[in-house]
Amino acid sequence: MGKNGVLGQRAMLRHRARKAYSLLEVVLAGGICATALAPALALMRDSMTVAENIDTRHLLLVYGVSKMEQQLAVVAATWTTGNASGDFAADGHANIRYTVVQTDDPASGGITGRLMSVTVTTYSDDDGDDAMDANEMRTILTTKIGKFVSYENMASS
Image 1: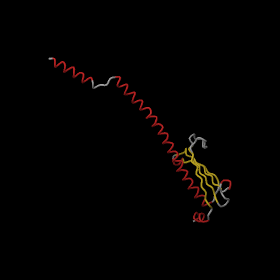
Image 2: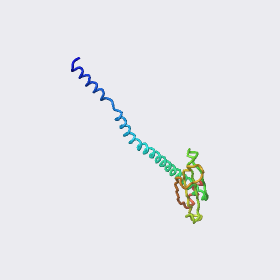
Image 3: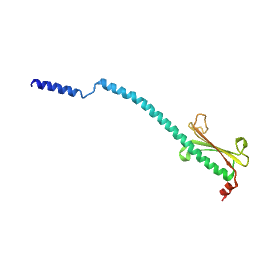
Image 4: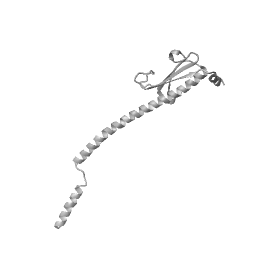
């Protein structure tokens, strides 16, 4: 082989050696990725927690409005006072519970025999004790409904 043949082989070996990364480059690249990946995973975890809270709050609102509409229909038709409570296990959400208070007591904002205050509270029973604890999410809806003969007539027809 001539001088050009040996130089050509060396050039080819150097060219081939440059196609790989050194251990230092691999470690530095891994460090950069880990530095970016850890906060990204923390952000993803926090986002999942926030999304779950938003879903729960949405369920509380939807079930609260549903229960309020149901109770308003009952009050309009029968003018029944009282309390009720339960959960939405039939819908697959046994941890979502409600309490309903229907009263025409003036101390609660009603007018005896003429105006009823209806309050619906939905809450997420996270610990499963069937009681609303101070740290559990809740939605409270309150409205009033008057006593009208037309409501009672429509209900009886």
